[in-house]
Image (cartoon, rainbow, N blue to C red; front, side, top):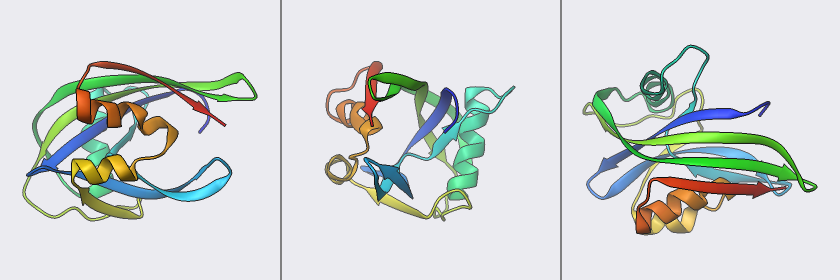
Length: 148
């Protein structure tokens, strides 16, 4: 990733399960499958809700219905050799979607529903710390540091 990141991410529930999208990422020098919430970068000139609708559609094929409900924000930094390389701000929203089954779009390799206990065990990327904490304790503002 080049430069700072502004993101919007969707917490989509079906019963108690939460929808995740999978991609292979390099973390700690190794390629690993990571499971993330649908969402991504807010493009220039785009509002958070617009980015959320676009990203959910692109990654899962699902259509957002209604107004997303704000859940929390995560501000973080990626550090390497003791130096901040870039920062991110990610906004998380409760999202309702139209009926249908999610399908991995061109930006993701897989989709998967996880129960909260499964999510806690699967979410091990450095930036997952805030979401895992939110699942158990709630909260509105989180700070995160990713050390390379």
